[in-house]
Length: 213
Image (tube, rainbow, N blue to C red; front, top):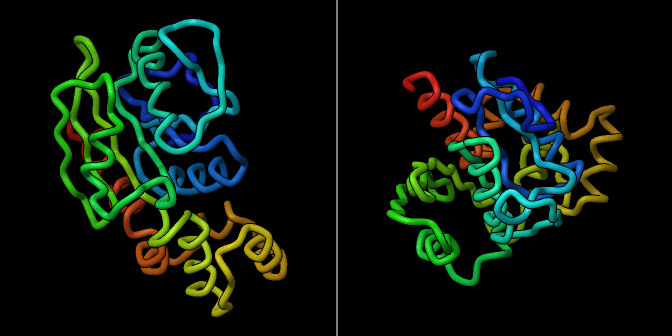
């Protein structure tokens, strides 16, 4: 899957738009994941530095948690994209009923249907206006955030326990002459699936849907 930074000049039929935080960490994580999956004709648009807000207007904003869902209507109206990958940290949920909380935050979306792909990965089918949408939603971290998944992969790959804190993770990766992109890109398949069970489930399903479309 080809990773790109800008939505312009992308064939909407071949593209999946990532919806997540706008930091360098998400860029590296998703770029490495995308490149591990087959199908060079398919595209993953990486998180925008400043995401579009509103219905095709020029307002911009930075988003956290469920607020990033606000950008979908702009992507649909301006570029006709219909496939999305939502990454959201567990800390944004108030209870363990993940499906119910996701559904409650899909304000303005119609005919919402949510199916589980794994414990914390979900396939959402819904529509906005006349557009049918597919959203893969992945909840990161068992308790709080994606750093838990990264720390687990570091331990599996290098045998080095590390706290799920950004500074500790970066320090440990530097000690192994690595970085987040290299960690994900070069990780053994078994370890990647164990540390990122939900994200690998989502990517596998995205690939299956794209190949069958």
